[in-house]
Image (cartoon, rainbow, N blue to C red; front, side, top):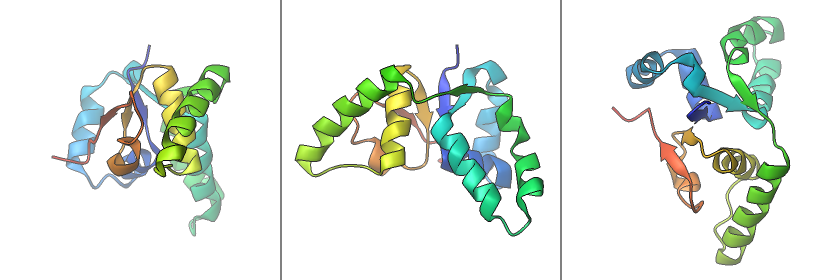
Length: 135
């Protein structure tokens, strides 16, 4: 069972290959411990469609992520989504819609979310977060 869910910004940094801290952490993990979710995959595909290099070339660069377990936004995630949103909204601390969905998927599967966007995800109760961009 995967232990880590990679957020979109982490996947982009992996593709860019500029952060040794991320490359090192990825290299330390068995592939079976890494995953993405359907929301992250959708965001990566949007980037491929908008790329100046062209979709086919960018899509080919995304191929390694297809080897990871991909978690969908399912009924369990929907229930966590509702709990998270109903907690944050009255506090005036809502996070972005896609981030809310990613958080719900991670929390519903008890995964550690690997993200540099800690300011938003730290608002979510019960979230486990790691920032691999920090050395």
